[in-house]
Each structure stands twice: as structure tokens, then as C-alpha cells.
Amino acid sequence: MEGQDICPNCFAHSYKDGACSRCGYQVSFDSHTGSRILRAGTTLRHRYCVGKVLGEGGFGITYKAYDTQKGLICAIKEYAPNGMCRRAADGRTLELNASSSKMPYMAGLKRFMEESQILIKLGRIPSVVNISESFQENATAYFVMEYLDGADLGQIVRAAGKRLPVAEITDIILQVAVSMDVIHAKTKIIHRDISPDNIYITKDKKVKLIDFGSAKEVSGSQEGFSVLVKLKLSPPEQYSSNMAQGSFTDVYSLAATYYYALSGINLPPAPDRLNGKNYVPLKQLGLGIAESVSDAVDRALILDTKMRTQTMQAFIQGIAPAAIGGAKRVVSSYEAEKLVRQREIYERQQGRQSGLDRQAADKAAREQLKKQALARQKQQEAVRQERERQQRAGRTSGAARAGGGGSQRVSGSRQGTAVPYVSVLTGPSGGMSWNIPPDRKMKFGRSKTEANLQVVQPEDISRVHCEIAYSPGKDQFSIRDVSTYGVFYNGRRLEKGREYRFTPPARFMLASKACIIELGVKYEHH
Image (tube, rainbow, N blue to C red; front, side, top):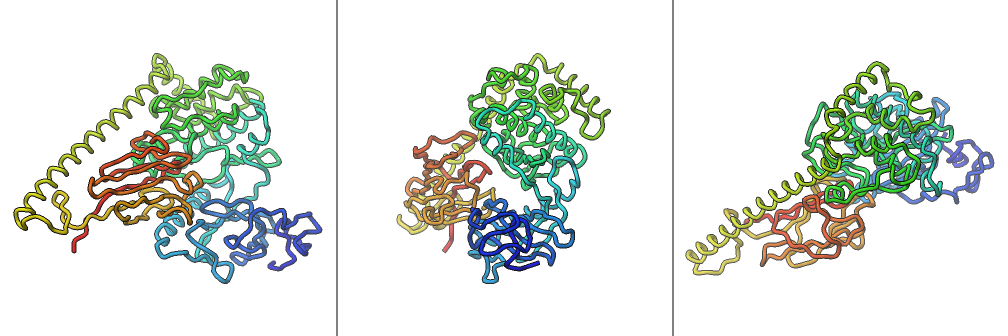
């Protein structure tokens, strides 16, 4: 079907001089341009004709396409991490910008294929975008999805300019909740990235949950998850790699999305809530929301995972009275009897917990976090004191042997030249590491021109996110936050613009998607 006369929008042979005489599409309307994008008319898998770009992110590009075998319009998502690769001379193949990008590129490719397999495994569950196949070609990967024509919930809320009807928003959230209930029960998969931007409403009023790139399969309560967060929507357990995640994790994110869609107000990020900042319950915002529905949202937003609403079915029952037609309209996600049994179990649990105050539970969670942070600080101080003791012992013994002087550095039992480094532990750039020169300020961020230490990250990582330096005389790192979304240490956000000093090794979390970096020193022998 390749040809210059094919319209990138309707795929009719009526395209000439950048305009289509059939659908009215004009290339000047398209804001997505550049060499990173596949040319319109390119054929993939000898079957799919690529059209205009539907969306472009840091890790992939989604195209409108035409399936020549089925005669249907579809959508194709291509793995194309920005900053890591470019189009080869053939205009199709992706090639790496630098050999150092191979490891993060392949790690991202693996995650991309995992997302496609998860979507294929889910099959045709209502309110989940359908995927027909995935394949690798042009040194990258693709998957083919149903074409959705409409807008995401975030766009709808922002475009409305006023608060949307409670019943309408509740109906959308319930459709997502019902589908996620099926997914949790039948596949043990949690989404981990439910947000207004990932809930799509088509022109014919169908609701679709998209972007399963962060989804994981769990069995019971497991630990060892990658740190992946979306500010103001992710629960506290997603800020840690060693906290259990489960259906309750998706319940929090969907409740946060519901709160935003109803009020137009974002929740404080989970770390801020753990430090005492809270939100105004829906029932106090004058939206006409029933107290029982507001309380159900509050239960779903409890920071303590054990106190929080555990299942989507329980959340469904809590907010159903606000839907179009009320609670009677909401049926079981896949088996009415099971929903009734789950409701009974949930009510018994709520009865046992009725004496526990929600704010008291949140306070207990904050106190526990502070205790953990204090224990870590004590441990780090003990390590620092032991290092200093060993350094003094090493300098004394070195002076006795050589009469003082020497070109090597002694640190405990390690001898050699101290080499400070910055390593990315998690996130899309996980595995990247740099040796940095002593006494020189280094800029960490995603800007190719401004950052000395450049990473490929979402826009939550600023062009220059923080400034880092190492002082060999003091054996200390300094770090200064200059970002929009912050630098966090032990769950607490550092004051922007203020310089902090830390004894290595030290780890910091940068903004959302939890780009965690480590500042440390290694010793090289000569």
C-alpha cells in the first residue's frame, strides 16, 4: 500500500501536496515531526501501513496505521527511546547514538515486549485496550492495538474548565475498577500506573485503560518491585523497592484519579503526606458528594497498606451510590456471587477496624517511617566513624613504614586511588555510571547541552535536576536540588537550592519514575 498519494489519516489514495481531498487532513496540522518518526506510508511486517503520529513519549511513538489484510484502521506502538537512538539512513532502522546506550536500550526493549505480552494475556477484558500482536523489526519492537478515537480523562477534565458531573465521572471510574477487578482476580497482574492520562474515553463513550508498561504479575504479597511512581497518584509503597504491592496499590491510584477528576485538585505526593501534609476530603469541597462515597475514597487513600481498602470490589461498592442509576446499576466484575461474598468479607473487616481512626493510622505510618530513617542514619554514622578510625590507623601505619607521604589513599581495608562515581540504580537509565572529577561541580539531568551527567528520563527529571560534587579532603559529596519535582533522601524532600553534604555511599530519589542514584567512592589499584 506504500505510496506518496496515501493519506496518513484516512489511508485513501487522495493525498497530494500535503493535503487530503477526502478527509481534509493537512500535514501542516501535524505537530509531530522530525527524523525520529517513521515516514508516513512505511509498511511494517508486509501488512501495516504507517500513518500519522497519535502520540510521542520518551520511550515510544504511537502511530495511526492501516491493516491491509483486515482492511481496518489500527494503532501501532513503536519502542523508540528518545536520546538513545536515531533513524538510520534507510529511514526505518533504529541505531544507537552511543555504545554506552546498549544496556539501557535493551533493558527498555525487554520491558516494552513484556508490556505487549501482558496485554495479549489479558485478552478482551472490557475497558482495557485490545492488542492483536507484537513483533520485532528494524532493530526495535512494535505492538498492534485497536485504534481509539477520543481523549484521555486528564484532557477532558482540563478542557471542561469546570467540574464535570459527579455521576458521569463515577461511571468512568467504575468501568476501570470493574475491569481491574477482573485482572487482579484472574491474572494477578497489577497496573501500577493508573492515572487520568491512562484512562481513555472514545467518541462513542467507551472507556479504555491504556499503558501497561509498568504492570507486574504478583502472587500474594511480594516484595522486590522496581521503584516506579507518578507524583500525586502513586501510593507510598511504590516509592520503595522492598515494600509489598498488590491490588491495594491500584486501588490507591484509582482513588487518587477519582479525587482529581471530581475536584480538579491533585493530592499531595505520598512522601509529603507521610511527612504530615494532607488533603481536604471530598465531602468538605461542596461538590454534593455523599458522605459515604467520600469516606470510601478516604479509605482507599490510607497510607498504611494494611489499613487501606484491599480490593477493587470493595472500592466499587463504596463509590457505586454516586454513579448514574446508583449502586443497583453496578454488577459484579465477572461473577455476582463472588462480589457479594467479597462485600461481606470487606464489611466484617471494616467492622473490626471501626475503632481505628484513619488519621491515627496515617500518623502511625509516619512514625514508623521516621523510626526507619533514624535507624538508617545511626547505621550510616556508625559506618562513618568506623571508616575514620580505620583511616587514622592506616595513616599511622603508613607513616611508620614510609616515614610519611605517599601517593595512595587508605580507606579502611581498601588501598588505592579514590575515584568518586555517580550510578543510576533504577529507572529507564538504570545501569548508567560515571566517574567524576574531584572538586568539580557536575550537573545531573536530561539536557544534552546543560548536563554533564545526562540520562534519558521522563519530563519529571529536569533539564538540570541537581548539582553534585565530591570533596576528597573531607571524603564528602555535596548535592543541591535545582529541579521542579525534587530530590528525596530517606523519603524526605531536600530543600531546593540548599547544598547538603553526605558521606558516601548515599542514595537519592529524583522526582517521579523514581530515578534512584548512588553517590559513592571506589578505589583503584595501580
